[in-house]
Length: 366
Ligand code: MSS
Image 1 (spheres, rainbow, N blue to C red):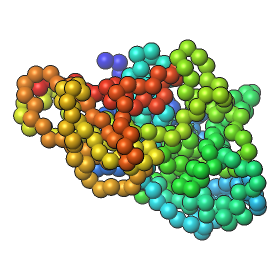
Image 2: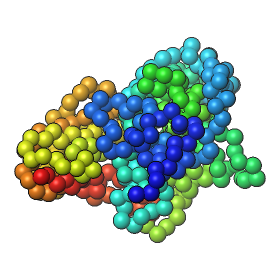
Image 3: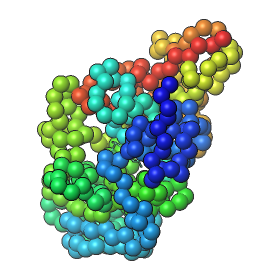
C-alpha cells in the first residue's frame, strides 16, 4: 500500500489513524472510526477546503472578527463580540460534503473519491441569523437569497469570481441558519471555519461558509463560479451551468459502519450491525437492514439520543450471521415517508449519492 499522506499543518491536531488524507485540502473520516456516540469528535471530522486555509492569525482574537451584513434595512459590520450579544442557539447537524459517496460512481467523476467519510454529526452554537436580521431592521426589499462569502485571502492574479467561496441559498433557509462560533463544545477550529461560520442545517457542506466575512440578502444568486457553475447537478457528459439544480437540501441516507470487510474475520453467530441515518431536511423515521443484498429487509432499532431532525441517528440490527459471505445494506425512511433509493442519481460530478446499494458492504464470516 502507498505510504499514508501526512496531515497538513492546520489539521495536525487531528487523529491521523481515524482519517484518510486524500490531499492537503481533503481529509476523510474512516468508515470504521464513526463509533456509536452520535457526535463525530472534532479530531476525527472530515475537512474539505476549496482554497488554501487562512493563517492561524485569524483565530488569534476571535471576538474581534468582523462580519459585514448587507441587504438588510440597516447594513453594517458586526464583530463576533457583538453577535454574541444578539442571541444564542445550539443545533446538532449532519455536515456532509455534496460529493460524499462519489467513489461509488462507476463513471469515476473528477473530484475527491470520498466513500462515506466526508460527513459527520456536529453540534454548533451561535446566534440565529434571524436575530441578526431583526437587529438590523429586517431583510431589505427584493432579498430572495442568503449569500455567504468566505474570508479567505484570494490568490493573486486571478479573477476573484473564479475562486471566491461564495454561496447563495433560498431566503427560506434563514429560519434555521446560525452564525456559529462554537463546535462540539470548543471555539470552532480554523480547519472548520473559525472564528465564525454560517451553518445552514439540512444543506450540503459547501453551503456552510467558513470564516464568513459577509452575509448578504440578495435579489440574485452569487455570480461566483462555485455557485454559478460549480456544485450543479448536471447530466453525465455535460458541464455545470446556472440552469441546473444546485446542491442544496440533503435527502434521506444511511450507511452501515460495522461490521466492515476491513475489520476482518467476523465470527459466525450474533452480530450487532450498526450505522448512521439522517433525513436531511426531515427527521429519520426508521431504518431497515438487509443481510442478503436487499432481497429481504428487517426493521433496525434506533439507538442513542435523538438530537433533533438535522442530526443523524444511530441504528442497530442484531442478527445471527452464519459462515459465508453476506451483503449488508441499510435503507432509511424520513418522517415524510420518503425512502432512501436503491440507485444513485447519475450526474457529471458525482454529487448527492444516497444509493443504498452503493453503500452496502460485503463481509465474510468464518
Ligand atoms: N467555506 C469556505 N470559506 N471555504 C471553503 O473552501 N468548503 C466548503 C464548506 N465551506 C469551504 C467552505 C465545502 S465544499 C465543504 S464540504 C465544507 O465546507 C467542509 O467543511 P469541513 O468543516 O468539514 O471542512 Mo463539499 O460540498
